[in-house]
Amino acid sequence: MSQRDRLARAKRVVVKIGSALLTNDGEGLDLPAISAWVNQMAVLRQQGVELILVSSGSVAEGMSRLGLVERPSTLHELQAAAAVGQMGLVQAYESQFMRHGLRAAQILLTHDDLSNRKRYLNARSAVKALLDLGVVPIINENDTVVTDEIKFGDNDTLGALVANLLEADALVILTDQEGLYTADPRSNPGATLIEEAWADDPELAAMAGDGGRLGRGGMITKVRAAGLAARSGATTLVASGRQPDVLIRATSGESIGTLFLPKDTPWAARKRWLAGHLQTRGTLVLDDGAVRVLRDKHSSLLSVGVCRVTGRFRRGDMVQCVSEEGELIAKGLVNYDHEDALKILGQPSGMIESLLGYVADPELINRDNLVLV
Ligand SMILES: Nc1ncnc2c1ncn2[C@@H]1O[C@H](COP(=O)(O)OP(=O)(O)O)[C@@H](O)[C@H]1O
Ligand SMILES: N[C@@H](CCC(=O)OP(=O)(O)O)C(=O)O
Image 1 (tube, helix red, strand yellow):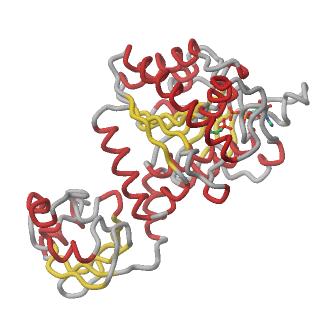
Image 2 (image 1 turned 180 degrees about the vertical axis):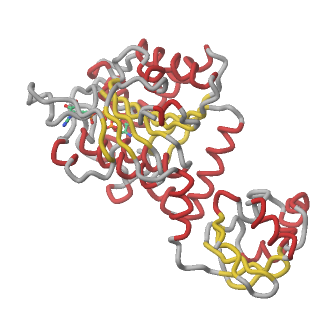
């Protein structure tokens, strides 16, 4: 099997589009280009591929709208430009997706949203809900509230973390070069394109340089993003967004751009990640029926199957699940904190709303967040 088939088989794909491409070299958004990428994404949606778009361009579009020639140097000016530009960015995407009868949603994230476990679960559930509704989430960094310490800084990293968040099969990074070259082709005309590499190959970083006038990260952040995405089993493609039908061709298995290969599948990587959460904050005691469905059917854990709760934990913490005899069955990220878990234990999911006044999730632990031991 060709490694390119990984993209052809991908069911959930994060597409990242960088500033260098989107903004027509500083002359505002390249609307015909946006229209062409959205056409391709609409074809992929029709083929049943779930798509998440990570798009840069707010600062560059804000600069154009405000008549700024130089990228602002102070944080608050950058934030102002991003706030102005984000309007144009999402309007452009929304109107293009609407031509295909597709809905889009705007999500602005900070580093904190993905490193805090409660917010991580919230972000994950919200994006998954959008995907279930057939909506295309359009994600950018929440530039208005970030400080230097909590900045992703470049959207390549954000794209990789979103691929981690959702265990995407693939991350496709579209940029203004054909892929990763042996050296920056802007200053090394003899550089050659790397077609395929292991995402964790330490030699790649030495080839990759920084970015152009509008983008921030350059190729080095794309190489790092590929390494990060591989941790949750995603394959990364870096390719030129100027190639006609690049998304369709790449997901048909055509050899285009640079492919960065992971060593794990998304499923195996997630289970390993979960298993690595050594510290558990509490214990759920399961009845025999719940033990059986977890083991035999790999089902989610519902509150109805839990007979006791011990420990103090918050939503998103790792807890252990044991049988009534005290045998360790599984570990997982719990959807309710211990006070609420106590109120709903032994109760069917349909009762959660009347008992708590809200429903965070219908399960106590979702099967994706559960690892059998
Ligand atoms: N080894 C390399 N191969 C390809 N491009 C490179 C390399 N090193 C540095 N670059 C530069 O990275 C730039 C793309 O990064 P960037 O400007 O941040 O774009 P984007 O906004 O799409 O993220 C290219 O224009 C290219 O000049
Ligand atoms: N979030 C900001 C900056 C992100 C950015 O420029 O990233 P990139 O184009 O990937 O190097 C924006 O949308 O302009």
